[in-house]
Length: 418
Image 1 (cartoon, rainbow, N blue to C red):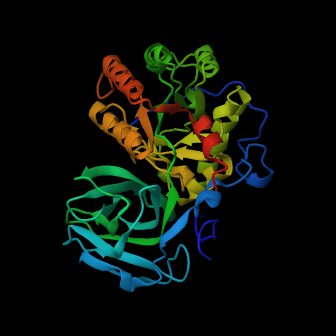
Image 2 (cartoon, rainbow, N blue to C red):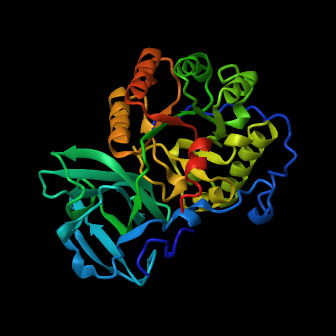
């Protein structure tokens, strides 16, 4: 469970996925992954440390919400909350009734603050509705020059949201941020309640990066996407549903080996007929362990420490289980992300929408962000991206000069950052 706070150095005091085909995993792993009672610390599949615990309070505080008088209201209402707290003695509870279009609070900074070299993260606990988007606006220095940041989350206890750029108005000067506002838009007709705590800043990366991910190990990823990426010298990341390997419409087993030899990662994507929000904690843990065990047993250790969430959905117990077995987790929506503070909920951008993908890439280049593009099929059928459109996006990556990373290479570059 993500909670509490730790002093750090430098601080004073998507797209619906296809139903999985039922094909048993082969060969049988040497791990007893079908026994969910195994405690993670003694489990041979467990990672060395909990990445959420290690990264959650990196950087420095911008506001600890211990003095509610710093904050004012544009819409909705807020109150001090002492029973649901991430850090310190209190958080702020933000509420909108079904008659409100949004809840919106703000704080001003006399003389402005310099956030030009920083990425922001905010601890959020969403109580209702089940899923929503949180927006943070930086006035730099006024409303004509703003940077809109945001993240979309599921209700899953306290999460630290890494806030990436969504929209720019004017020419914001991030050396002179005079106001920060936090809001959730409901549109009216729906009540909302959530808690905020511990707004932090963390040094930006020195350059933008892009990760190209594929869900479901579908055949077109090998037949079409792989040759296009090879022509650019780019590696990719495949979220493998282990129990589908061997089906005719999936990447062939020897093709998976070929892609890994070319620098690709095969990561866990333990998708069944239900999202993890519909599974019991016991079944969540069993699926996570079974999927990782298959990858390890079949020679894909490099990617086995990372997970792509089935349907992009998770809850608190799923995050806790994944933290025992994986260092990074990727969700369906979220857009570009700055310095990682909650590694289990790294956001992605729908690559099927070429305009949206290019915007994410632009933000990555301009603000030194990580843009994670998400694909399924590369056939042009239905809602999937066409081969030509996919190649166009990869050409744009080349044009921007962004560093293309995999889950494993990205993790290697950030794991010792705190």
